[in-house]
Image 1: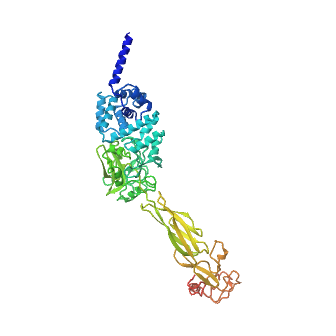
Image 2: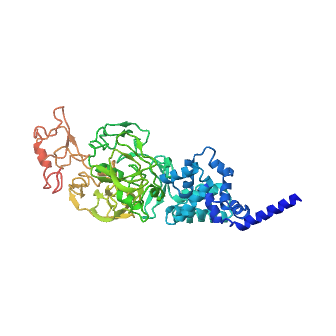
Image 3: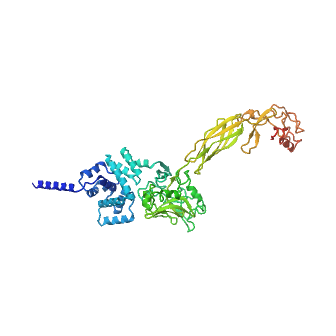
Length: 612
């Protein structure tokens, strides 16, 4: 009988509790999942806690700490600091501010709050401030948590994955909901969202697109192993570059240091250069006193500087438009982290003593902009964010951007030339971005030969060809190529010159613009090959006029000529070692024959107007 009475009492009590306490809403329990586990609520779990557990929200929060999942996340010995920081990261993608951290550490240590009541208090505090980024991020995460559960999904790994990329940007919410509705959740979904994968110096980066300017940026600082998950996430700090320096090893925190200034900005070695006095706060003051060479270096987009191909270091104005002067602004390091660039408080490496200072409290990003003897950067901490300048020997992180690239233009043109004439052709291209251009021949000419490199080409028409020819080229700035351009060539018949029964044509030197005959004297045509016998021509003894001796069929004699003119067609050979000159006794110094071959009146070996 007592057992029956006890059962009745318990049933009455249970009925009273359930009737008098409001059943927790799914939205409220979902937020507990986010805060405690940093994941979406699984469908079965959310259904149990809201419909079957019979517990109040505070009791559910307390029960969460009895689960194995919670014990694995927060094992015995987890400090209050680590616990508070984890909850803030889970809810708001940020670490707690110093004042908040100190307050909650004290409240937990004296027992004013339990861990589960702390979580509820932080959630309620964010909801009470509906203008903060915290509540936006929390609402976005909660929206995804509910969508995941309402889709009937229960995989815990997928629940963590889908939550890991949610920010205050509503685009991340829409993207995640699309993956949920298609049941298409995998470990790479946020890599897919981030965009193009870029391997640079052995590190894989992803691209992010600015919601303010549409500019594409790398998703992390140069040298960082991952996108930032927190303000003080050391894996996303990246390397510490002295202003204007390349990737030479100095940027690593493990690099040695020296106080000896660099004499060459391109070959400074793997050593971090500190100041030896207050006068040399620039690591390469003598080599580049005004900084112009190094600013130019960091402006390169061809992959030869610090950034990947197509990317460069931003100007201070470009970085400012994405941060300080964006429509959302950036007022402190929390804003910097919540910015789409996920900027960490990485600290900087001192120009004076080589130490990394202000890690986890202050953030810095170099730009390629110059300000007198110093250079500009953006800086932020827990209370402010601003643009300023600093010594060039200071080591700071770099974030690379991909400026909007305007494709270059290749210029078509038409040229005219005479047949048989080799002509220099300068290819023309332009680029509004001022990038270096490379030239590529797409289609070669069909009636001539094209030689040369880059923009300097030489066109030689085929022997005897008269008519039209063309070739096609394009230019590239290393990122984009131009539309093709055509060089149209008109080859006209060359001037015919008849001399001693042979027909010649004139050609113009591409080097000196001097006019020459197109073949050797006596040849029947211009050369078609180096062993083309038809273009060999006649074989003249030096200074002699065309008298028949030049023909291979001419007779020979060993009698020296007694006159340099009026000789009758014999090829004169030597009779001893002293008469290797066919007219030594007549013109011992050769002056008469040199004068003969210098005539341009057509009385010597060349046509009128030409000479040897």
